[in-house]
Length: 618
Image 1: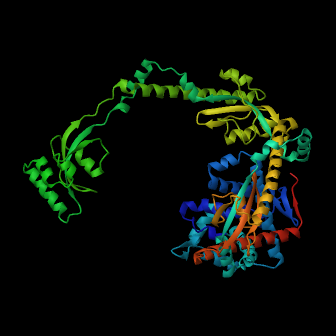
Image 2: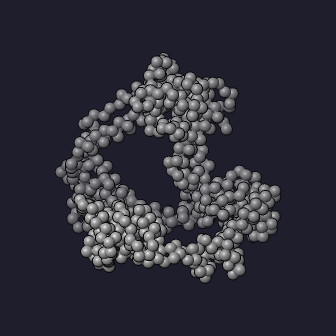
Image 3: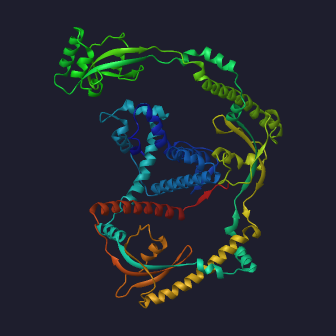
């Protein structure tokens, strides 16, 4: 538990990190150690209860973790209640596993002393300052979490006891170097093959299927023809973008807005600058710049000095002339010096990241108000948007109130809003119509309130300033599609099966010829075929690596493809090339993790097989 605290227990962020790590553990089943509860159990493990409150807390913690990890993808996935239910079930199974381990540890007499807990707390970097345990920091973090020291130590005791058992098991796993090397050599192995694809397409023309065959296939495979649950909707929609199109703005309104907000339409003052630049990488740069400034003070010509001495050679050719600048364009020191000058004046030496400058103000273009004609279109669009948003919020309140007060129809809502009721075709959770395919809407459409009770939904936001209220127009439960709906597909499938069977027979004939060393069959050769080959059908690659090593003659076999068969002749197995120590070590780590995970799963399965685990019927 504590090792996960270390990366984040700094200052004010300690609470968020520790809540996600420590308290997720506490919520996941430690409350039984901290106090009793009368909550209805979600499950019982050998008589020990896992309450529904504990399950809900652990589930919410897992949801938060997944939401942070998956971002917007989780919002789409969570629209499916079945997906959320699967997460909740996996969380419950984890709580059951924890309970089984706790009970096994208790039966084995595993204990953690107070001294061990205190030592673990003192050694925990999250509770240290400058490498030493800081009791004030420790107490402060616990206060942020709302925990007393004793309850926290109880959590530590449970966690450390549990880890005694699991660490003793998974910590004993090891992988021999020869084992990892053998796997690396197998993965790096290549094979020399020849193959010939027998396409099923030419055999389709002779395939015939009777109605009886279609009916028999349908009756024997009804599980393949399940239709998902579907709904069609009625909905009332409010979109500020639609209102903007019908929100006229008069010239007088636009002019009035312009007059009231003229400060928004002031063009910045612009200044035409020239400079002499001495690059900072010269040892005497500051001295050289100061000498040039002194010459200017004594009446020297700025343009001539710039041409002769400025390191900015492009502007030097123009007498140091740069371009027009608005405030804030150049570095702050350059900017401040330029806008402090009067026309014709030059500055003292100014230091920037480029070097040492002497700046001259050549001309000034005063700030001016942008003419109304130049900004009229922009003002009209702004006023249209404002009118549209004002109208949207006014109608949104009516939408929410009326659809709630008259919950069994949208007719009254549409009448109050002055809009029409729109409809959708039937759709499932996975194919909502474009524009309505939003997680919140799909979730609402298949909710009990809307789907079963026939009530209006709450206001659902599709986009900013774009909302709908929906109700179910038609609902179809998941079920088996009628034979008439799938007959054509079954017919095509059976024809394809017949064509594939004909292709298989042809492939077997060709296999016999290949074994007889026929040379005129047009087989394609592939030398050093690797397991990850992308340019050869995956079924051919997979079969090639399943075939035994050939001896004096090639090994020949056939394999089914998506539409046909292939004959494969395996000529040679090539040893892996360049198996590095780094690869072997990486495989050792991967295998060790897999073995440890398998050990843990095996432990849980064994404990569960000998336990009485009762799940709530709800």
